[in-house]
Amino acid sequence: MLDVHRLTISLILGIVEGLTEFLPISSTGHMMLVESIAHYMDDSEKTFAVIIQLGAILSITIMFWNRLYSMGIICIKKIFVKQHYDKNHLCIRHILLGTFPGVILGLIFYEEIRLIFGLTYIMYGLIIGGIFLLIGELCLLKGPRVSDIDNITYVQSFLIGCFQCLAFWPGFSRAGATIGGGLLVGLNRRISSEFSFFLAIPIIFGSVVLTLYHCGSSISAMDALLLVGGSIVAFVIALLTVKCFLKIVQNISLVPFAIYRFLLAGGIYWGLIT
Image (cartoon, rainbow, N blue to C red; front, side):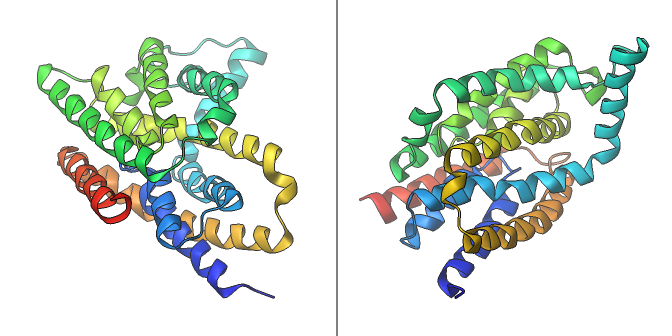
């Protein structure tokens, strides 16, 4: 029999995931916050919070399909046809370099990372991540920035990947770490955001696969149905959110997002911790 309460929670988490996954405000922190308020936070729900990200990732894949397809063709030609291509072109190698640090750290510390989920951790992650965004904004004042995603260097890709590792701390935000990291290494807001979206595909997909490997056997048929429903909601909301966000960051700084993080951290402290 369908559990209406669990269905409601899954749809709410889908909305929260879609709204927050690609914004620098921490999707995991928001989902853990919702689950805590709803008194619905055991190991199976933590697993749900990870797997439901597939819906959001699908939205990015569809939105940037032409670019992803182009990157794939370049890679195939390079390997099998030995065809040279313009080095000033974003390719899969950039994504791999940006993904590598997170994959290694995630595999080594998988169990330890799962143990640090909690409101106190999220609160500190929100604060530190907010400060990180402000530092990134200050770097924008230093001069010319990379304004074309095809001009990102391999070194910049790797450094952004290193910054992405900060997101293993709940509340810090993967998007916040990569977008802020992009600003620190010389990208403008829009290019930092777009590259952050590309990095999200392998790192989150890998996280989902790893979670399924460890916990997939505990997912029932009803759980799977709820996951599909939540993922569909996350897909639709994320599609709309990303389109709006890319327009916003061209004209507005990340300061409002940092302020929101500080306010949310304060709300968590006074409303749920003390």
